[in-house]
Image (cartoon, rainbow, N blue to C red):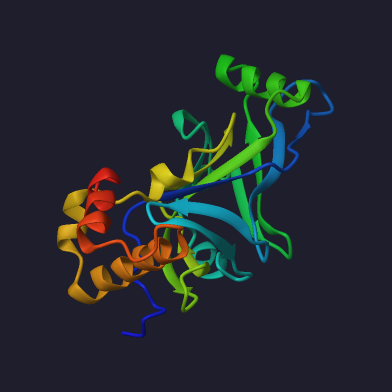
Length: 221
């Protein structure tokens, strides 16, 4: 395996974006209300963190093409929880990728208390971020691990969410000790080398293996 091609992170990841949401009410005043926004943006680098420091992540254009062609089951949630407010399977949630990113349009029922609260918060400007849950299928790291390009994701049985604030990225990608134990020797060595470069860049360069191991333990590795 090429050193730049680190192992794909397993499990669900979440990302959040501060992009304006739009609420359009039915002309009659009855019936569903439509909420529109972007659950993800493409070709825009943003800072992420993992146990080994900061890096830039870019969701590449086309990352959603395959998963959307397979008609994934995706739900609209509030803060990634609660009862679904719209659902692709029911036709009330529509997802499409355009030049800006992953666009979502959802028909929601304002009779529901949770939906009404969400719509009011959006209209008041009290909530203005979206997030989405996904699994990475294809990615590539730069040789120095300072940039992660994501080329393909899987959204089946994931969600798009209106959120107060997106979840802490470090929480989503942090590795538990059992994850470390299951890694191949090559992947573990790649992570170890990245941590070594982090120490080498610090004032106390040349720290012994014991110091590196101690920090790994503090990070839950």
